[in-house]
Each structure stands twice: as structure tokens, then as C-alpha cells.
Length: 115
Image (cartoon, rainbow, N blue to C red; front, side):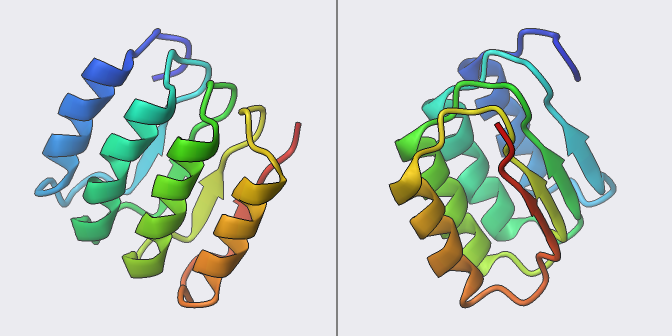
């Protein structure tokens, strides 16, 4: 779903479906209108979804609150192996939260934070 301008509201609905949908293994949301609220909605989905292995959120507007939510999700997620958050509004404290989350996550093997 690249460049489809998926809003936080639409992403919240998608995240709700991901809580129980177990066939999807990869989700690409490249250059959408995803902000902190959308990333926060994904938190609960990632905590309960055990099928998704790859999540790409390149080129959105995810900042501190959204990154903190995704970091929290990583602490309890045991299926995601690839996460790309490149070209978002991620700062130093956000990176620290992600690193802390990785201390309790043994499945994530690729994390991209390029700008």
C-alpha cells in the first residue's frame, strides 16, 4: 500500500483486523499519511499478531509517540524479523527506546532507520 495516503484512521482499522488475521506475513505502508496515532494503533496489533514477519513504514511522519508505541510492541512481539522505519521523524530518544526494546526481543533481525 505504497503512496495510497492511508490515514491514521484507516490504519487503525487495518491494525484492528491484523489482531486476528493470521495469513498476512508482510505489510508495506510506504509514503502514506501515517503519523503517531497510526503507529500507536499498530502497537496492539503487533502485540497479538504472530504471523507478520515484515513491516515497512518508510517515508511517513512517525515521531516520538509512534516510535515509542512500536518499541513497546517489539518487546512482546515474537514474529517480526524485519522493521523499516526509514525517513520518519525519529530522534535520538526514539532510537534509545527501540534499542531498549531489542533487549527483550530475539526475533527482529533487521531494523532500518535511514534518513
